[in-house]
Image (cartoon, rainbow, N blue to C red; front, side):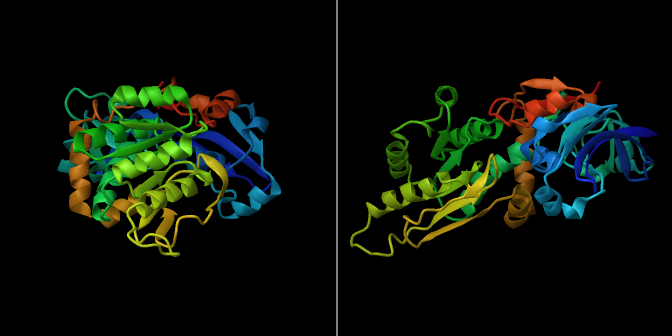
Length: 367
């Protein structure tokens, strides 16, 4: 059968090209073909799709969207020149065809979630073992975001425990992922300090039950952050912003809280390990660390797939089971707008979701 697949291509003549192309699918004995009924447009998809191109210059023509790339970007993405890349981290839909194996045949007609890449398509072929049947009564929209945000939020708590911390700081906390983390931490009794950038997001998180929801745009933010960290004892942070000095500010607040407990002065600072993980890049500016937090600290990147490998198969299976059992409660997602596949090559639509504003997430749905 034939599927329509969305591709992003960096061309040798210095353009980003977004297109929807026809591709033939042929299921092997252990494969299933899923009709993609719902797929979220996640920040990671947007980064791969647009390769930092200036979408203000995007032009749609004859079913193709093109954006001129600056020479520096063409150099930076040289490894992907003239290589069409399918986009879409995750999604859900109905299994409409299956190979001859019993495992594949057993999935026919079921609504499943999958984290297989290339989900911005009308259909997706994957091994039967790669799909997760949804609980009875669940829709494809319920299961569309069943991996990236839920598993990332759960992995924060599991990583916290595995590394010996007892409380968490989280930025961009009003996102779908952030709201899931609020619910998880409330249920699990984990102190959580939430950082947002707008007053309405503070109220939103408090309505969800968050004890600490701080607006980083206020003049008293640093003092409030230091007080919240001192009260919770948070020594691990997960930062979705990435650029600028927010991560540094968090480490500094952790150090000030730890220093209060020191019995003697040390010019090396406290011995309490302060861990900053950067898992997003909502701010594409350079990350700036102002060294005011002693010598016992660590900062690094965080990717959920790497975290799951480190946590192990048993923990990952337990996390997956929890997501499925709480799919429409703890791990429910909200979307600003639902669009069809053809809208992915519309310049105005791309400019809208490329802003990646909190509460403005888009969902791709079947036509």
